[in-house]
Length: 618
Image (cartoon, rainbow, N blue to C red; front, top):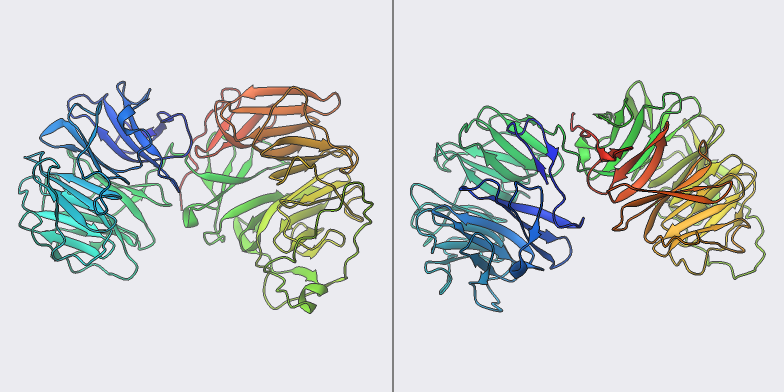
């Protein structure tokens, strides 16, 4: 959870709610009589799990409400006339509390086949016994606190998911509802709805409705195709953001209604100072981006580059020039691509691996690399060179002798640029390597041109690592290694105790390291035998990285203890740090480490505190 003390100008991480990292915090209620009393409804993606969390000290510390443990809370509201009355919509039904959230009871019929999957809740501004509930099917209403419920579907298209319901605070007979089928308005307390016209209805869904508390004729509709605004109670609508903005929530400052904030899918927070007519980014301090790639500038050690996914035009690549303390977007030319990997050539050029090919940074602009050579055998077999890899070979039997693999001579295919996924990059001297969905690529021209490496099996490689003359590649269930700079390759027999490889590294001294759910394993004889780290039970390993300057392997694991490890190779001594964060990886920057968290941006040593925002600057 983040907070702002200047109307959204700056954000600061307030707390981690629930001591877990899989909660979606969609619903926040602040007690109007005690602002330190905050309640948050939570749910979990792909699960029926969730809960209600309560803070009595302004969000610093949180406890779970026992009556709501395990409930997937999809909507949450406080009664305008009595802040102690709270109503929550869950996947199971409608729950109510009359004591500020301490105790809860189900007020919809137990096991109802109709009133469940409650996506929206609204409470009458005068009578808290009147409650509206929007489900994934249709809306419902009770006038007696849940004793009886009525389906209020007249005028609404059948089987409509009802995302939002609002009741006019001055005239409770006026009710708005938004659904997958459009926006509806009732002027008789939901006895009958009329569909509002004037908003494009292609693939748009209206996720939220919000009235201006001082100008009730003004209503905002947050949709999957931008924000719409009406100043005449829904008769006419005007879109005030670009159509690519996906709006999840709208907040109108009750004191200064010209100040409007939007919560969006990929642009973070957007702010308006003119009543919602225009918006700009407001993400300073907000760092919840999914960081998947990292590279440090070897010529300027304080310059760091990271890649993110799922942010489209607001994502891509970000750069820090002060060791990770602040960040700026550098994504021109990437066209909203997800970044899977980053690398730097020996001449200082930066490369990006995406879901659709390779990009090269020149003069502050990323350009698609078209000069890629692939194997003749791919065309001859009818397999598209830029699509799926050839089937994986079976793992060799224990003790089997494996000869170096010979491949056909690469030839140029120029019909279209390489369009496969590029999952990892590594560099050894002047040679760059890229693990891709079509095989292992290499470049000796600072990334201007690439060719398939002659040697490793043609398959989808997920990981690549290089150190001195060693190069290693791995998929989820196979690995190969070269000890002569990529000229010849041998298959590596993986440890029997590791059914799936989730990360891989080579250490330049003959050691191959692999990790996964079962832990960390290393081999000094190309997989004939494997060892673990005695005395350290490390599970769910998600990153292994060879730090040449420190002569160590850096290890992170997605575990509750938030510990990062370093194995000093000369003596196999293990050092560890309790970072306070669940990390995707750690990397060295000078005499300290930086880490990428799962959901909270970049953190740095020695305190492992929040990095400043990866700014959503266009």
